[in-house]
Each structure stands twice: as C-alpha cells, then as structure tokens.
Image (cartoon, rainbow, N blue to C red; front, side, top):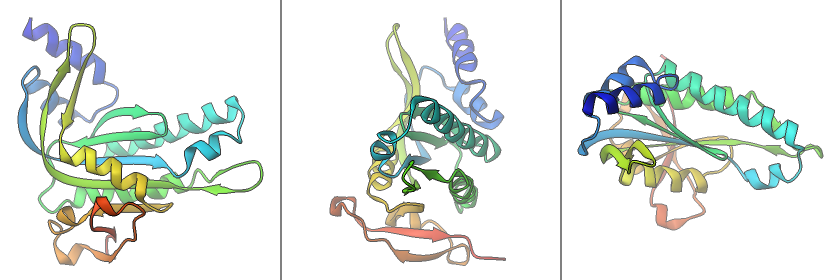
Length: 211
C-alpha cells in the first residue's frame, strides 16, 4: 500500500519537481512532520482587471507562458512546484540553503523572466508580477482522502507568502522581516516596503548585490 502511494506521488509530480525535491517528497510520503521550508508565491498584479480586457485565446496563451516560466525557474533552482491557482503559483523549497541564496536567486531570476512577458491590456495599460518569499517551519505531508490527495505544506510560510504577494506593489520581490534576518548582510540590500495591508507586518524589497 505504501509503495503504491509513493509511486502515485512520483507520477503526479514527476514533471514538475527537481530530482532533489522529488526525493524529499517520496521519502516520507503519507507522514505529516514539522520541517523548515521556504515558500515562494507569485501572482499577477490586479489580474482580474487584465483578464476583463483580453480574449480567451490571449488569456490562455499568456497564462500558459507564465506557468511555463515559473516551472522552468523552479526546476533550475531545485524547488517543488506545489500548485497553480488561477494567476497565483506556490513553490516550496524543502531543503533551504543556509543563507537562502538559492531561494533569493530563484525569486529574482523568476521576476526578471516574468517582466519579459510584458503583460498589457488592449488599451496599453501595463500589469506586473509579484513574488514573495517566507521561511519558517510548516507541517509537511500528504493531506486529503482517497478521493483527492495533495502533498503540501500547511502553516505560516505559505499563508504569509500569499498575503505579502497580494499586498505588494507591481514587479517586486517581497520577503517578511523574519526571513530577511536569516540572510547574511553581505548578500542583501534592502528598504522597507510600504504595504497596503498593515496586518502583514514589516516586509522588505531585496536584491543580491553585485559581486
């Protein structure tokens, strides 16, 4: 029974995760455990406004390009692409790098590639993308029942990452203050971001310094 579950998970996620993430995913399938992770969320700023202005063909082509861009960068940087949800995506890094360099590099590379999509409406209005990163402990495991199961993380990292991403201004990478403190000073430059939702707490826009 356990082997069957492992094989099912491998088939389900095989095209969407890096080898390292796939190994971590299958090694403890069926068990919930507390684990340190980094959650990365992306979305389209004011996506509903943009979607109201485009035809189905344009929307389908653009969203698929968006998903493809996220999938590629996540694979390159060793993350696990958890799910697509409309204009939002959730990625989990199950074995975070000690200084979060890998996760920051993924987020910055991804944001740069997404900006190349140049999302606009027929009237010329430009729309941007947001990326958020939150590190912390979460409950990692297989959730659901025999009808539908999902291997994912439940807890603060993903929940806060969604909130930060929704509150961020266009074309920005946002991380929470707790995650920011984990990054060595020689890797970061920062300024406090003004968010539209005060309950998200302090957050920062960051970038890697030129070396």
